[in-house]
Length: 272
Figure 1: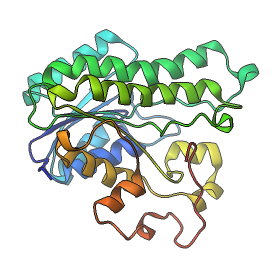
Figure 2: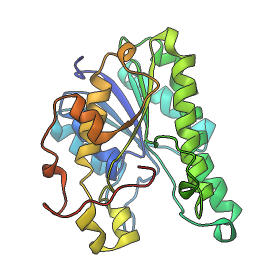
Figure 3: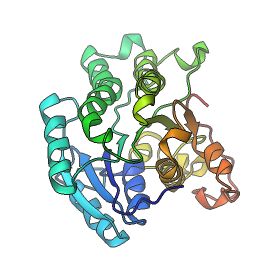
Figure 4: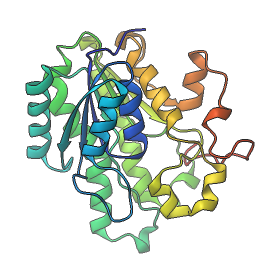
């Protein structure tokens, strides 16, 4: 395992939820954290901005760089990379966490919503990876980590929300393809997905407080992501990993600590 101290980790969608948790876990080891997200001003319903997370990163022991970024824009992404390299000298890991979701069927999905999901999910993985590539090639332990699921052609995962599923599967397909493409450069490309639903403010808006019983906290995803990024890049690539399963390979046995309501029956996430 390698150390994250002074490593530069760029996280899209880092202002709340799983992205914030990954930022804080890596910051606790002294990493430089780029919090790249669209939220610079407080949201009316969702907590957290790039600046509040930057303060938390500093308190946790990391060096923050908050950047307002639109991952749909090539110009915005290029500027994100430029400012990161200017501030920290390079990039060691890119975490493609930004996402858009709409679990709607063919009849209920406006093309504007379809385009949003595909541009923020699949397209942004490709765009951000391409922009970060020159810097990643110079790192001694370079990683790209995509927050996307294992692939399954079981129709139940496509029925009713094909637009969303295809956008997330696109991220996983890029994981497998780019891992092979970048193998000779020693750049690891992996995907990470939760075994259970993860309780975030956004999920609270979707499910209400009742949904909290079957969920885990984002901390489990933060721990899993940190362990992936600490793994030598040539030893782990091209994998679509599940948080709990991966942490078990690293010796973790206590998963009750992640439960929002200890002892409650957990709700499996989509695609698991």
